[in-house]
Each structure stands twice: as structure tokens, then as C-alpha cells.
Image 1 (cartoon, rainbow, N blue to C red):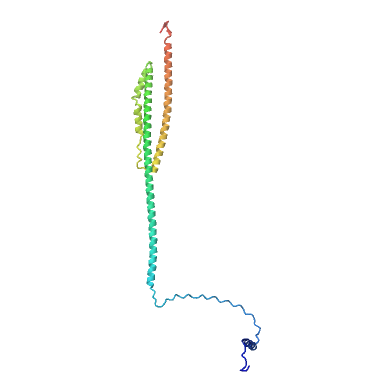
Image 2: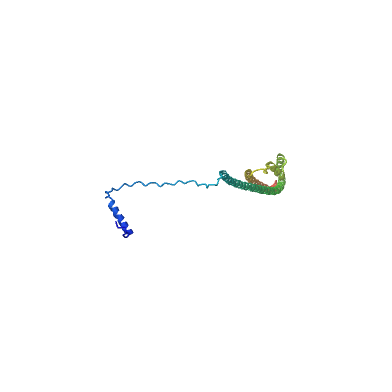
Length: 259
């Protein structure tokens, strides 16, 4: 040790002296074997502590619950109002759609009624025109028959035959009477005022088939009438030819005298 009156050691000298003492005091370390690697400990999750309520303040849980219930009730009421508003709009749209459907149905019924009325008027005009033509043809046929009867009545053997045929035939109907009778038999009431669309279609198809049948019958009758006219003309020509031949033969000489 240094004397009391000597100079104080510096910091470097003190640190060097401490290191020398540590080296002298440490025993020699034995040969250390490497230790096995230990598993790392899991990190500890800190538990969250509830917030501290400051002293002096009191929390009203009933008020918090009431406000939450009011909020939920307000949201529920909003959803209910939106649902009923959507439902009201859908009902209004449905009512408008049904009104459009009814209006279109009424328009179609009106158009169908108008077309049916026009078709009825057209058929009536055609029937009147056809009846007029048939009356003219019947009148013309009657005149031709009268001429032919007059010609045949001049022949001695045909007069009695025509009288007997007239008696067997009886009273003949005129063309108008026959037409009215046939129309009364075939004309049927339609009764289409309260029919639905599918029923009107079925009725139209029935009338169409009936018209086709009438046209077919008309064609057959016209063909029969044409053949009868042809046979009458042939018979008329034969009668005319026979009358001419009879006049020529009547001038022959019989018994030395001219007849």
C-alpha cells in the first residue's frame, strides 16, 4: 500500500488492479460439455383487465340496457316499415296490372263484337244479293219453262203428258219461298254475348266447318243444275228438229194427191 501522504491512484490503475485480483481469485474452469437445447417457453398472453371505473362515478346499467333496447326497437320498426312499404308498392303494381288486363280484355271483346257485327252484316248483304240473283234465275227459268211448255203443248202427244206431270208435281214453290224455308231450317241463333275467348274460337271453327260444308253442297247443286240445263237444251233441240222434220214429211204425196 502506498503511504497516506502519497498521490491517489488513477482510475486506470484501479481497474487494472481489479482485473488482476479477479484473475488470481478465479479457479481454473473444467472442460464444459455442450448442454442440450431446451424448448423455448411459450409467450404468455397477458390477461386484459376490465376497464377501471373511476372512483366517484356511478354507471347506470339499466340506462345502458334501455338505450340498447330503444336502438334495437328503432331498427326493427324501420325494417317493418320498409317491409310494409314494399308490400304496398307490390299490391299497387298488382292492382294496376289487373286493371290493364281487364281493360285489354274489354277492348278485345269490343273488337270481337264489332267484327262479329260487321261479319253478320256482310253475310246478310251476301244472302240478300244471292237471294236476288236466285229470284232472277228462277224467274228466267220459269219463263224458259213456259216457252218450252208452249212448244210441247203444240205437239199432240206431249200435251197430256205435261198435264199429268203437272198434276203429279203439285204446286211448286217459288225461289224466294224455297230460300226462306231453307234459311229458316238452317239458321241457328249464335248466343255469343257471354262466351269466353276459347268458346268463341270453338264457335268460329264450327261456323267455318259449316260454311265449308255449305260450299260443298252448293257446288254439287250447281253441278246438278248445269247437267239438268244441258239435258233440257238437248231435249229442246231434239223437239225442234222433230217439228221441222214433221213439217217436211207432211207435204208428201198420198194416193196421187198432195197433203
